[in-house]
Amino acid sequence: MYGLMLDTADLAELEAGFAAWPICGVTSNPSILKKLGKVDLYGHLAKIKALCGPARSLHVQVVSTDTAGIIAEAHDILAHLGPDTYIKIPASAAGIPAIKALAAEGVGVTATAIYSSMQGILAVLAGAKYIAVYFNRMENNCTDPERVIEEIRAFIDGSDSDALILAASFKNVAQLTRAYAAGAHTATAGPDIIHAALGMASIDGAVDGFTRDFEAVWGKGATMLNH
Figure 1 (cartoon, helix red, strand yellow):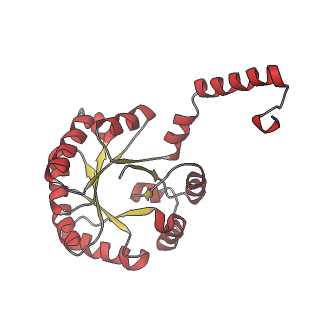
Figure 2 (cartoon, helix red, strand yellow):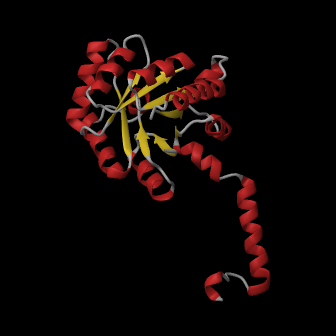
Figure 3 (tube, rainbow, N blue to C red):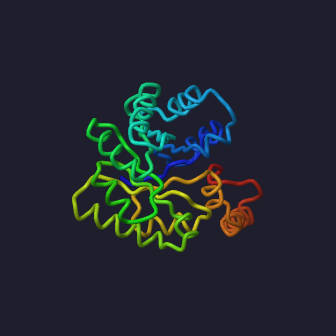
C-alpha cells in the first residue's frame, strides 16, 4: 500500500487537505499537539478521528517512557478513540518490548523516532505495522536517510513482512520525493510541504501560458465548456 498522510492536528488543515488531496491517514505527536494549546485532548482527537472516517487511519503517540506506562497509555488511547487507532511508539529500549506486547494483542502499532536501520528491523520483528523513519532529523545528524530506508525496505521485502515504511520529518519537497524514491511505502508531511510542491512558480507560469494561448484564439474567458 502506497500513500500520503498529513502530519497535523489542525482541523481546518485536515478538512481542506482531505477535500483536495489523496490523503490516507493522519499522524500526530506531542509536539504537534502542543501547538493546539491546552485543549480537551481526547475531544480534539475524536474530532480528527471522525474526520478520518473508515477510509483513513489515525496515528496517536504515547508520552510514557517506560514499557508498562507505554502499554497502559496505549490501552487508554484505544479505549477513547477506538481499536482501529494506530499507537505511535518510539523504537527505543522501552518501546520495542511494548510494541511486541501490543502487536501480540492485535493492536496496530506505528514505530516512530527511527534513526537507524537496526531500529527499523527490530520494530518490524516486534510486529509494528508502520515504521516511521525520521528523514530530516537523520540528515541533521549526518546519517543517510535514504540508505536507512533502503535497508529496512530490503529486510521487509526479504522477510515477506507486511510492515510499511512511513517516512516522516521533512523540511522540503525534495526530501519527501527522495524518501519515496528510496523505497518508502508512504510518508507523512505537513500541509506546507504539499502546498510547496503544487505552488512552484513554473507550474503557475505553464498554466497561465496555456490560458493565454487558448484565449488568443477563442476569446477572453473561453474554456472547453464553450465549444
